[in-house]
Image 1 (cartoon, rainbow, N blue to C red):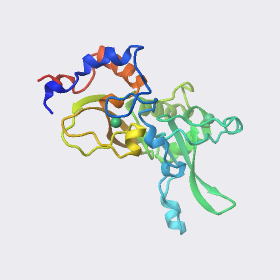
Image 2 (image 1 turned 120 degrees about the vertical axis):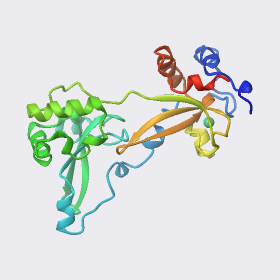
Image 3 (image 1 turned 180 degrees about the horizontal axis):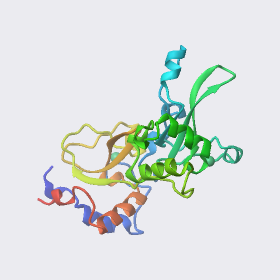
Image 4 (image 1 turned 90 degrees about the vertical axis):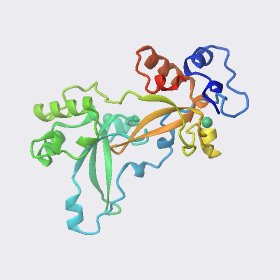
Length: 252
Ligand SMILES: [Zn+2]
Ligand SMILES: [Zn+2]
């Protein structure tokens, strides 16, 4: 496919943002099926995937796993363990900063990770992770996986001995790019394409979304036509700010 046959991202935006979109027409790469969130693939994973698959079988191993860690939640499945949140069934949002505790489950004798909202972390827990980190924020388990903003909040909390801003969620801003697929390897993350294992073909315009998972960053792709209306809106904002990666490379 030559570049000239590919719809230009800025040409498509007004079309997809207009109210004329038929969301129900047949699939295919120019379809706009029902909204699926960009991070949806991660949400479909079981809660356990958020924790390392480590079950200590002796005391040495148990000792080597820190009692606490911090991270951005890779799913929206984990319930917060603070009493009020637990009663209310409040879960931790996708991407939200969360505080993990390696916990013994009495009934089975197994260890596993439980989590709290950042705002629900007690002063005692802040001081415990401060001890684990020997007073240096950057030594805390999971610190390296945080965004710069979340690192700053974590650092302030260690300094103060408490969470200093209970409104802080720390959900990273989505990062997008557009590009012509250099290969045909990446499966489109739109649910219908994903179920049918449809890949973005070499030469096709695709939307990349930077996803964090347990401290790793990777790009997930969708056919340009498979992005959701919500994504197009956010891309429009990113475009308006002149911050859409890859745009200048699309021009022949
Ligand atoms: Zn909570
Ligand atoms: Zn697709």
